[in-house]
Structures are given as C-alpha cells and as structure tokens.
Amino acid sequence: MMRAFLLATVGASAWAVAAPVPPPSEKELIAKHWGKPEGEGQFELKGKQLTLRATGDGPADMRVTRTVRGDFTARVTLADVATPAKGDARQPHSHAGLSIKGGGYSLSHYLLQLYNHDNNGELYDTPQRSVWTDRFIDAQGGGGTSLKEVEQGQTVYFEVTRKDKTVTVSYSFDGKDWAAPQAFGEKLDFPDEVTVSVYLSHCTCQKLHATFDGFTITPLKK
Image (cartoon, rainbow, N blue to C red):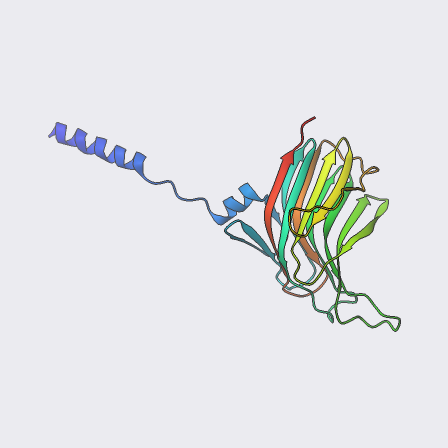
C-alpha cells in the first residue's frame, strides 16, 4: 500500500513539472517588444504590429516607452494612420512617430497632419501632411521644422540617432533609401539615460489610430 502511494505521488509531481507554461499575455508582449503603455486608449497587438487607438473622448497622448542608456539608433515604421477630420477643433492636427526625452529636453520626429487656414480664416479641406521634427527645452520653449511632404496613405519610416550628445533624424518611404541625417540636437543636452517612445497624439475628439511596425533600438559602439 505504501509503495502504491509513493508511485502515485511521484506521478503527480512529474505531471505538475510537465504542465505547459501559459503563453505571455498581450500586455506582457507589448511591454517586452514595445515598452510601457502610457495614456488613455487601446493598445492592440496583432502579429508584430502595434496599434494605438484613441477613445475619442478628447485630446490624447498615447505612447509606449522604453528607458535607454548611452548612444543608440531608434527606428519605427508608421504603417497606417487615421487622418483627422476638420470641424471639432480650431485647427485639428495629429502627430504619430518617435520621441526622446530626458533632463528637461525633448525631440519628436513624426508625421504631422494639420489643417491650415486660408486668408479668410477657413480651414482647407485637406490637411498638410509632412515629416516634422520638434525640439523643446523645459521653461524655454522650442521650435519645429518641416522636412518632407507626405502623400495620403504613404508609409513613413522614422529614425532618431543619439551619438556623442548630438541627435540626428532621418526618414524613408521604403525602408531602404534614407534621407541624409539632419542634426537638430546640438543644444539638447540629453543625459546618459533617456526615454524613447512610439506615440500618437492629437487635439480632437475623434477616434483616431496609428499602427506601427519594426520598432528597434540599436546601441552604438563607442
């Protein structure tokens, strides 16, 4: 009887050890491959693509964020993005792309969709679409630069590189031919540790979304 009990116990232990490990949840996969979700909205993972989906309750700033040390190159592909409609904001606009922040400095490199006004103060029927870069310093302000006009529905690849305290940005429309890197970070004295984010922000009350792919952060050798 004792022998039968021991065999049963050993068999149960072996079964417990061999039990399959549950697959990671969507939240765990997002945190591992993309970063920490921040902001109100839905974070949807489908295959290797991540969609940030705003609720439409008001202006939104959604992002997934990683902490990075040292020099690096960050890249992400904006595979799909909703176009804001005009009418529910004075000047409807949305941003979708990459940003880095640290030590009171920030740089954003993104697709800007913005409705401009004509001479009579009326909004144009279609928004300006362009690759845009903003730089800001806390308590001092900053500025932005339009780099390239973008066609409706065009895929945009973004790149931000930090090396030796200089930040450069580049972009591509096919992931192969990249624009010459442009430096906008000479006066942005980022600390060694910064946060890198993939983000969607807008000023409307619309259910906008942005789908990203291929988010990588590659350390650079000294």
